[in-house]
Image (tube, rainbow, N blue to C red; front, side, top):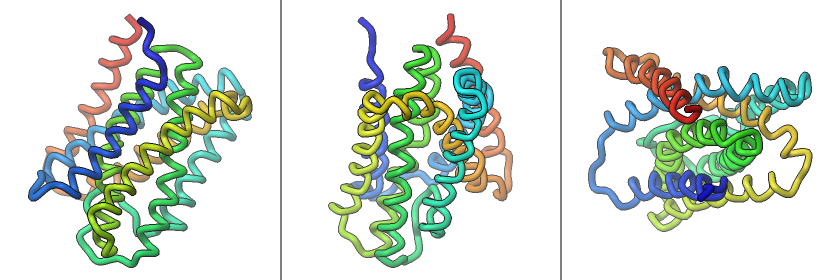
Length: 238
């Protein structure tokens, strides 16, 4: 039985909700485990974007694919660090305003929409590429859901609204898959767009979360993430 992109997108969306639930339902959770996951995700995402998504996007669309990648990179920076300059991956421990929480949600909704575009676009190329892109996306979905729900809690929203914010991210991912299947332009250039977004999230969002911290654990996790990508790449192409 062939697994459709929808099945992968549903799993990715569920990871957003799981991340939000980890904040809204927990009494305690492991900061060290989250940091390790972030570092691991960064290595995997950077590897898949530079080794698979970028080359495939340029091979299919040429200069326009490269321009779509640049647009994706700029869009994430604009939505996450211009409209919502306070946003970061990880639990928010300081009080913030409701405006900060809402602006971060708006930025992440665009990002998670492109996550869906990335999954759908990659599966249009091959099942192997689709699987690799899915793995890259699902790895950062949990800390993403955790980040937005903790930001809502820090802004004074209740646990229910914080959980709904994580659910909204999951829904946006599914919408990305739906729209890609119906809009020819997005299907044509979605891979390039997702290349820029994936690179930004890995290199500009996740790496700064751990690169200034001392010790070998997180740095090792980053390189393990790179290694896991090559293991996964070999496995899905066997």
